[in-house]
Length: 405
Image (tube, rainbow, N blue to C red; front, side, top):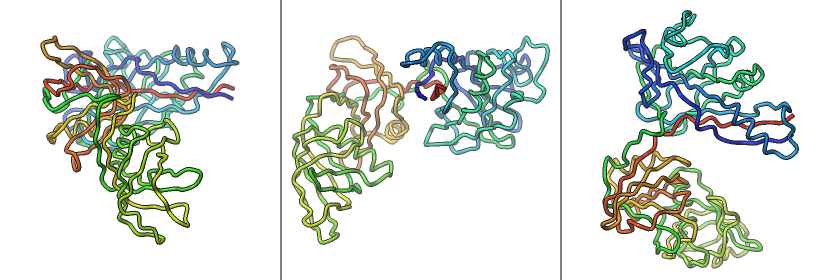
């Protein structure tokens, strides 16, 4: 049995159901958001249309030993939506619309399309009979909500349908409305407009970094490693930032004020000799720490160093961020698309697209926030003048694991 994992990001989506319009409360095809929830006078439900069969076929076709036409099942499938405005944490449900019903961008609150002669049997949309007892509830994490659609996709696959139509609805009696991103062509500026305190850093640039107190585990064996032992968001951000922006061979300061098990470290000068893996957040291999008779030591420590940024690390740094900018950066997530429009000297404006690896809030120690990028940064605009950062409005993402049988 083999498994493969991939994202489907280029399906097509009908925007939010809108009950306050004309012509039978049509969905407006020009809408750039998905809206869920309602008020006393309006109700909103998002219908997301996907055609993933070609992507499944392409994925399994690349697997060694797979024969065209061989059966497979969907081992796991999640649909992710990213909040634009509105509340988080509200109850949201996903419903599979009938697989034999034609759904298009004119779907209304009353009918599957404006041209349909038969309306929904229930206002807002019918449920696929085979999935009538299956209603996934969205699980929130920050600004994103995920739905487990595994049974939906297996019903869809076994029926041989091409179109997959998912309806997202909120609590019927709730007055809250939440908007989600849907179209990548729409974007909003980070910080509310042009920034003059933004610069790019990449491998070879000088860098200084100082963390707050982070709970870590120091392990002494054939080599000495320091690993993160704190799952708070702030600790993870700072740990990742220190590891990614500190070069192998760098000497750094390790301050541990704790006294446990007879160990008193205080301020220790260490050297980073390597990492246990290339994964973000992996333990650091160091020299300079001695624990005496014990091999493991938990402590809360601060790290500080001045070094050259490692090759392959690319950072977008915003100094002295205002509250709006700081909030916008904090809401970025891995693989979020950033559109950067930069100006270098007298050169014309140029736009580049990057994706986010992770972010770090370093305002307490160094009054800055950082966005670590997956791609190599541009060489221009190192002086921090006139940079527009635009947050691409991510489409819903369907992620699936396929199991071959």
